[in-house]
Image 1 (cartoon, rainbow, N blue to C red):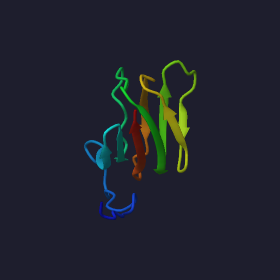
Image 2 (spheres, one colour):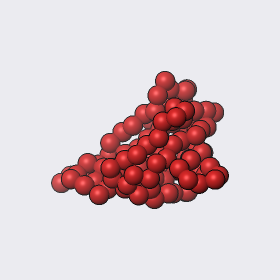
Image 3 (spheres, helix red, strand yellow):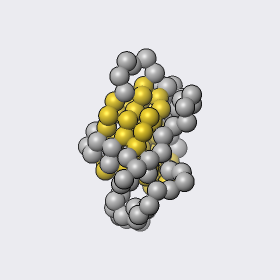
Image 4 (tube, one colour):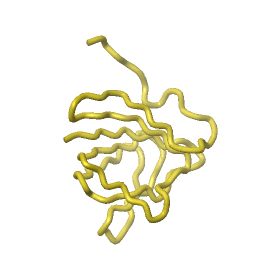
Length: 110
């Protein structure tokens, strides 16, 4: 396997995108690592993520609000904050910063 290198903060959009930018960095059986760039996006009202795999997510840059079903208060995440979401933990992104990109590192695994 060849050495692969880069920066999670390179190639960020200068303006708001119509949708999130998702880049798969690594994909193997039972493992997927993605860089997600949000520019003011949120999960549509009434929609929840309910994934088959566990997800560990880290905010690298920017800020976001995360709602986890059953919790009374939304979580505000900033640079360095992470959350481990077990499989079938229903959650949604309530908001992301629109003034500058929010960069996520998402690790999906089973």
